[in-house]
Every structure is written in structure tokens, then in C-alpha cells.
Length: 165
Figure 1 (cartoon, one colour):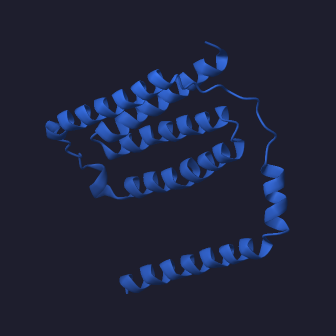
Figure 2 (cartoon, rainbow, N blue to C red):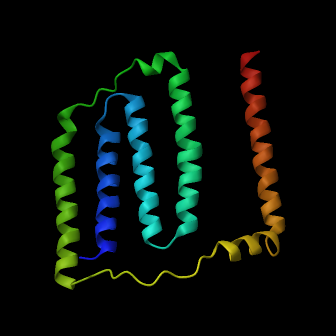
Figure 3 (cartoon, rainbow, N blue to C red):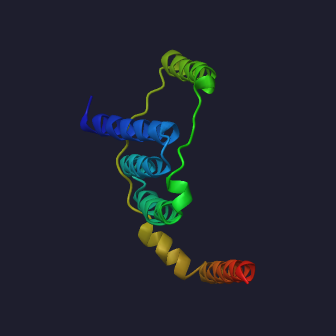
């Protein structure tokens, strides 16, 4: 077992354990904080796969945008922070059986086909080429997408303002 394998298992364990706590935690705030560790674990796996651009986008969009928005939305709403999510144990047995069957199928396929994933040499980064394409060949699409997002933002603000009046 080499360093790459050890790091993969660490990131996989962080992702799986924190995802488990996201689902099973009754407090919404704690669940959102565990979601932070899930996102970082997924970004770490992207880094190990030499997908550096996707890892940075994962951190910027999900951690920097969606998770912070979720935390502010939950913390600024007083009624939600005091509510405990009730998760009954009635679905725990079927979920455990389904997960066991799925894991058994995955392990059996890997065992019988001797399917092994070998890490390859990290390719050159594609960020420079992606930036060049966005600002040369696809600049019209890039600008139209920005305009579409601006129109969506103005529409959402006007709808929110109309409901208050």
C-alpha cells in the first residue's frame, strides 16, 4: 500500500463518515457543518484524481457558496434552529439491507473480475487551456451565460420584493 492509497482511504473515510452524520444528525446546524467535511473530502478525492480544477470549483461553489448560504439561512431563521429533525429507526433496517446488498455486489464484481484501479501519472493541468477557450472561442457563450444569470437575479429580486408589498 503506497501513499496514494493511504490518502485515498483517508479522504474516503472523511467523506463517508461525515455524510453519515449529515443524514443521521437531528440538529440542522450540526448537519450543515458535517456537510462541510463531506465537501472537503470529495474535493480531496478530486485532487487525488488530478482533477485540480474540479477540486477548486468544488470548494469555491459548494463550500464557499451553497454551504455558507445554507448556514446563514438556517442561522438567521430563529424558528428553524430550535427544531430537531426526527429520524425514526423504522427505515434503518431496509436501508441497511439495501446497502449491504449493494456493497456485496460491488465487492463481488471487483473480486471476480480482479478490477484494480492504478493511479496514473498526473496529467498537465487544463486550467490554462480552459481559460483560453472561455475568453477566445467561447466568449459569446460565456457573456450570454453571465447575462442570463443577471436576468435571473433581477427576476428573483423583483419577485421577492413583490411578495413583501
